[in-house]
Length: 244
Image (cartoon, rainbow, N blue to C red; front, side, top):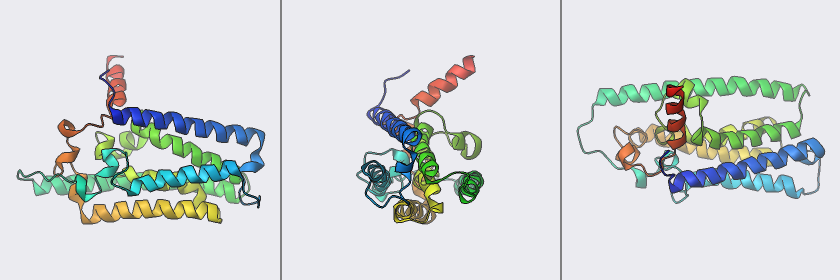
């Protein structure tokens, strides 16, 4: 395996941190589940408020072009648009955009179906707020797993070659916040509101400036210009499966 880039090492550290967060929430869930129910406990809970802060800071990082995040997220900002001067095949670009939109639609439908099932379980009382918090924290870890190790959305729906070219990179915020959509509380909806800001700004930028999201039009996304190398582990796994 080739040498790990600084960005990949950074995301591996995030993976470890988020895994520890999930393990902490899971331990609390198993030993003192009521501590995770912020809707019934009127006093401030240090652990649950710390989790809120962790989510908020993670979402806010998506909004700044100075954040140390992947090119997959930074490509929305004008400073990271490196226009390709060579002639571009307009038909190829339109076809590529259509495929990206189709993949994004499929992801949205699959995610909606999955989480509607969870919402039904919650509203029928089969699961409570602590379980929804646990699910959101699992999504929080899964977001990094998709970037570093394996992404079912990439493989099954989007078919993009890597996270740098991912059409839905910033959707991770609203995906993490999805379980909170169904819980009417400031704690929940403040997270949902910020996640929606991240996602709406991303989609608005994509609508106004799709050229920033394609390697056919933005040299910043080309493999030869990429320093992130977040694909190293995925590529290694792919080669290993080919030889199996």
